[in-house]
Image 1 (cartoon, rainbow, N blue to C red):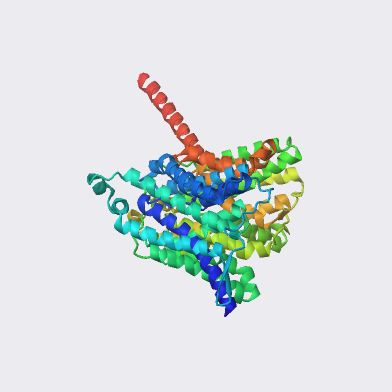
Image 2 (tube, rainbow, N blue to C red):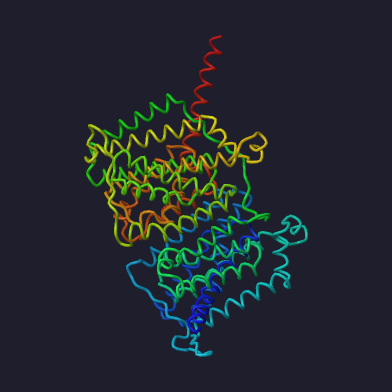
Length: 622
């Protein structure tokens, strides 16, 4: 019984932390309609800032705590709302998701820059050494502080939204912003205040969680993300249900540690919050949750088959010539760009044409690499590398087929994180690697790096031609129609279920082939190659490059492959892939078509100008 109570108290403490972060998510969402994927990163930055003030600079703990909680965190939230969020009101859901994901990776990059991971940091517990005994159960004051903070915040929010004039104004802005404005309320100021409050709650959760775990940038961010599940249990509106869901997550996690069999704790227990997040997203019914709005798509015109084949052949020819001149190190970088370009093409098909946000494409790539390793290489292994992820993608699609936008993004996020904890960590081994052979072709020595580079270029070209061919066919038109207006597509007899299932399976197969070739390029894979945060970077870079064209996918992939080179040039910048990607996304703003889209627009204008001049000459000639 003592063990049960001790685990229950520990679960209550973690549940209270999740409740704090989930409450902050709810506060910001209900007043803006924008889900803040950077909420966990804000809590992480606040925890490291508190460490910097209190431990590194020697500030008294109460002073550092109040400065972070009441000054720095609200200021950050207010600035984020004014600069990033306010221009996004009414924007398509894809734009808002990318913007907050961009903020997430930017904060990660800044944290790595300011607090390099090679230094060990420890944040001591509050009131260390002070305990209280209740029925032979020893509880330290830090645990009591966490519980008291959660109870105080829950009661305060309840009273604030039901009794205070400002809280009632926030509720009014949620229900009808225009009517609230007519009554004298300023919706922008109310929303800015809610983001300041949400940022403070994220900071409080991060500071209280940090002494309980290792002070690590990525680990702390992902632990705060566990609060997403509680927010979804509360349907992003109901604060009591949110708190109850958070306590349930903490309780189940800790009880599993004490009573579940070893295999359960090894494989399932670390993923319990993500499993609950996945289930909570699936069972949302009848909720009028705002998740952005759709706007008409302006798709670039796909080239003809002849032009695609000629461009692909020219690409392979140029790649072969360039590859023959590259050094072995640069050849590896270029090869990685090619295989990541194949994975990016899966996002062009799924997210660009189909409008389905996926944060698990590297998970499918990892399954392809794993299948290739187990098959022992060859063309059969490459086929299996496509089939296994395709089956997984179809299974995910069947489960989440009715979800779109925010809820699909959260479901794929939960799937990717659960696969990291359940599958890759054990199938590939922590700190170890799995050998992946290269495919083999009769008469072609793919073990030669330069030949393999040309082969990778050919695979990318074939995949690009295939994606463009799908875009020109009836299936591609159905995808565009579903992306533009699902309701109108349904009236025309388009089956959303079968179309989304097929496109998810196809995109997963393409990503799986890319993952198998990535493993063959390096000779091995590890569990760190397919992490959730890397999938986020992949999606953001694909959006920067242009989700609607293979050209954008190639540009994005080469940027990703060049990050290690940038890291060598700027060793003091920490994880440059997070910082550069996040800053690029924030600078891009609301341009959903990316660099590839801008190039396509320029091409269309040049073609239109050329046609216009030809017509003028013809008209002048009579």
